[in-house]
Image (cartoon, rainbow, N blue to C red; front, side):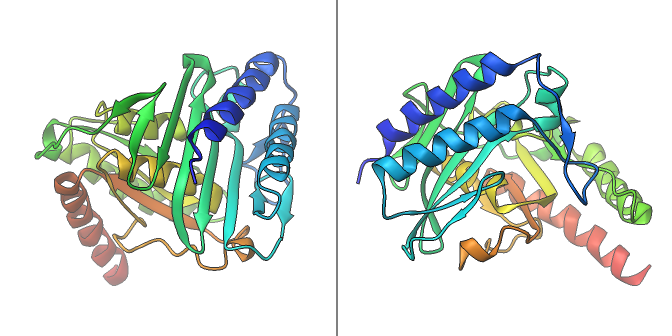
Length: 273
């Protein structure tokens, strides 16, 4: 089945809603996590995308960050992040996006994301390549981490400050090994990897909806996409994973290997410290 047109149309509508609200939202802190916020735009976009899926693919499951779960007992599950980078969006930063991905059983098969402020829509289907505004995108086959910019998403953990301090020790090692570290903590960074502007994007603490859409897009652009420690990401029984913590390490193969060496050394130090 061809999902390209559905993705483009739905992400374009999501972009317009985001642009209509941009600069005039009232953010609210989510219960239990002071680092996460939600706005009226998140709710409106999530509702719109869910309704479009129900209309176009009425037998498919839905997992939406804000609207919850629709279980149709289907092998197909749409995973929605209405606004990725809501903290940025709420502060009128343009570094945010709208994400929509599709799993068949436990594998991403289609997905994409929009960067409304940049008027860009990225789409991909398994085996068909990755596109930005219908133009093919593919990463450069970079070989040396030292010449690459790397994006790293990091958030503070006030409930466990030592966890944040240890993660910043790893961040320091990555900074020393590459040309520089960038951080929007949003899908904007994934877009920069897809275009070959950045050489990698890493995040230790995220959710399923932060991964599905960008994984299929980045893999189709030539990126190796694993969990933070280099293992395949487990999407089995996706409707049960709304509260589960995910992570990712996304980079062209050569750079991915170099990043994993740094992470492995840091992990050993943490284990024996």
